[in-house]
Length: 259
Length: 356
Ligand SMILES: Nc1ncnc2c1ncn2[C@@H]1O[C@H](COP(=O)(O)OP(=O)(O)O)[C@@H](O)[C@H]1O
Ligand SMILES: [Mg+2]
Image (cartoon, rainbow over all chains, first blue to last red; front, top):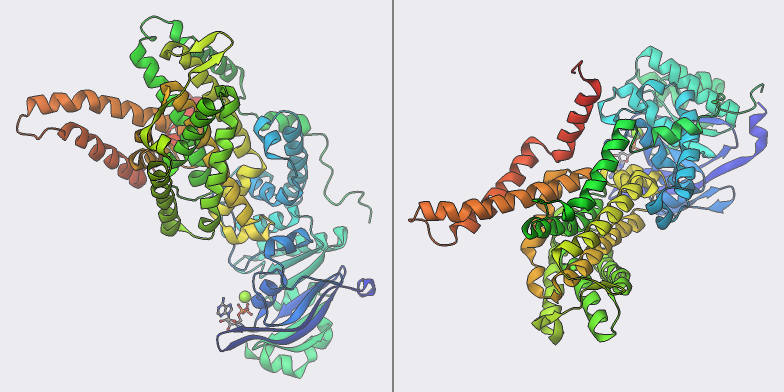
């Protein structure tokens, strides 16, 4: 695969994360190459969400470092990390429930809005122009994710599958370099899953966005991943291309075999 | 890749987006808006409407709307309870009054410094409270009410006693009667409403609601929660300060009694009844509660007269009970406030005659 040649965009180095006596992550080291789809798999409680939270600044490890394009980001708060180009979705959908689909996506455009309060007060002129520009960008994303019909609906009334899609749209609105997806197809029916996979691949291929995917559906993982990392009890037990992972004895024992 | 752009081409939509983002959309709405604005400013000239009683009431409503707009930005949009708003009205009022009598500044030079002073004091109380949530935050703002009143009462002799303030003037024009002051009040009310609406329908408003609805996701979307909560606090108290400035120059008298905890609680009730997170709702809430208050002021003494076994003052006691009751009823049955009713009516009108 030529994607791997682009070199690393993200690097986690000896990450250790603890909650009281629980070791959620133990000495985790891996790199993510620019433009690849990297999947993180492992049984429940393996630490997959923890590593996402660590990369995005929600958890701060007691040991180890996270680098984005060579710059250390370990101690930064989530909102700073986000502006550096890392977007995410959540395992248990976290949307702005009182806002419409459109406004949820617009809220994510926040990092690009540099209007001052005075021009917002006056609205006409500067602020209006910016609002229209942002609206255009967000409408393109809505078209891309085929959400035109629900753009004005409050997200709290949407079915589960569509809310997951809104969350992906909101992450896209940040125009990130890397998107971390925490179980994006969980709880979806087959058709919704296929759509979601198609969107993920399109984002990766056409825009070159690096994808870090946490996913339980092995067909999807084996199908779309460039590389896979396997976690078990907070340890990284394997890393490689899908064909290697399928054959790895430890993985089969720890994860695939349990089904 | 054959694609020139990542997303499918969308054409030039900017004009339709501009239209879609308008507040006033149809011709009928334009006509109605303009007519009501003209009516609003014509009221002092219309017989029957221009009674001093009604004008005083409307001035009170206008100033209270400004106070409650600020409160709704903080409480309704950003989700931070504030039960000390009248203390910040006081800060603005005293600042404006002191600038006026000590430095001889006219109202027009005092009003913005009044807002800013209030916002700065608001920020001082806001900094610790943005880290708190719910009841703890409410207690901090209650603390602001008590501490600021305390300072005004015991540390500044002038504010403790109250002092007279000059009226608002433009050239030789003096706005010292309700009929004249009405124009100043409405000018500020309309302007501050316009500003609030615009802030809330653009970036800052979305950031506030994002924080209110889901602070974890807001952080993940790059919204600096600390900064924005503080900003909401400062907008809230800036509005209070401007209203306070208007109030003292209207009454030509600055006194502690105009800024009580009870006032603060009424502001919260008005915002709840009108609709949390709605600019239109704020206006409805203030009008509704003010009207209710007036009604009870009329009915209260009548009831007392008819029922001699009631103790003296039962009428005004009744007021509190009824208003408290109304707030509770709204919280239970219509948590989205009058604004939601209004939207239903509008939707009904749009679809008429086809109903739902
Ligand atoms: N905020 C937290 N407080 C305490 N323990 C946590 C917290 N978050 C995760 N953990 C623990 O860390 C381990 C890994 O969790 P997680 O990363 O959510 O697993 P998964 O791989 O299923 O996403 C689990 O044992 C979990 O109980
Ligand atoms: Mg998880």
